[in-house]
Every structure is written in C-alpha cells, then in structure tokens.
Length: 110
Length: 118
Image (cartoon, rainbow over all chains, first blue to last red):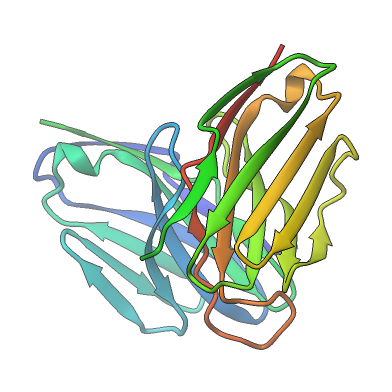
C-alpha cells in the first residue's frame, strides 16, 4: 500500500542544536515531494519541492534532500522561530492527488 | 505573489445554519482545492477543481457543497453541519491539473477558516 510516513512525531531541540526530520514514502511513480511548514492555526507554507533522487534544496537554515525512498529536512543551528510543524507531501501518478504525512512538530528552546 | 485569501478567518455556526467559505487567488492557477484539517492531523483533501470543473470529490458528505464561479474564486457552502465538522478549512491553488503529466504542482495554501459548529 502506498504510504508517506514522517518521523519523529515530535522533536525538541536546544537553540543551535542541528538535527534532521525524515519523510519516507512507498509510492510507484513519484512526481514530486514537497515540504511545508505550518504554524498553529495557519495554513501550510511552502518550503521546498524535490523531483528526483539526489536533488537538494536549501533555504536559510533548512536543507531538503531526496533519495528513492525518503527525504530529509536538515535543520542547521535552529532558532526558536523555527518551531512549527513540518509536513511532507507526495504527489505520485497513482495517487492522483497530494498525500500528506502526519507531520513532525518541532520545538526549539532558547 | 503567492497569496491565497480565505474569508472569514473564523466562523461559528449552528447545526441548522447555512454559511459559505470563500477563497480567492490571483496567480492564474487553474486548479483549486479544499482541505479539512483537524487538530494535530495533516490536511485531508475534500475537493479539487480543475478549470472550474469538479475533478475530485473525496466522498465528502453532501452537507458540504463546493462551487467554482470563475478561475479565481472557490466557495464552500455549508448546510446542516455536525459538531464533528468543526475544523480548520484550508483552500489551496496550483498550476497542476490532476491526472495530467505536468511536473509543476506546488500547492499554495490560504490561512484557513476556523469553523466551529455548535
């Protein structure tokens, strides 16, 4: 069964403590993988899109990578304002729609 | 500009009321989406419109009625809702047409409407 799984569910970091979030997927025919950030009570904010294995994208303290089975969102020296829920979404030919993972709630303490 | 505007931001309604949610985008996108999001859960797709025509309905109860009057506007009409329908309702838009072999499919989301059904 096609699936998108994010881990961990929640992550607590100290300010400056780098870490990675994982999004694993089991789909045939990946059309694109997307990372979003969502603050409480707000809509998801687009961060990155990745289309092929080996691709990497960077934005400030965030870097997204993609392999044939998973994507990582690396957070380098995070700040409290990076605290949010990070959602991964997959667009695959057999889904015919966006399919979201359950998200990772990141809390960065000062 | 990647803005999707949703109104109202908050809505409280009784189970016998009729209300509507509105979504607007001016990015020239021809695909628009309604999602429902419960607390601590990811967004769940409800409807997709492609070129103003309904292309996907995820078996949503008929008390939710979508409408796409033109390429920039998307409405969600609500009638006889239940308390369990209380959620954050999100609108999104993209260039992508579901089912087409187009690689560009970034969905841009609005801030949502927080709906409470009493």
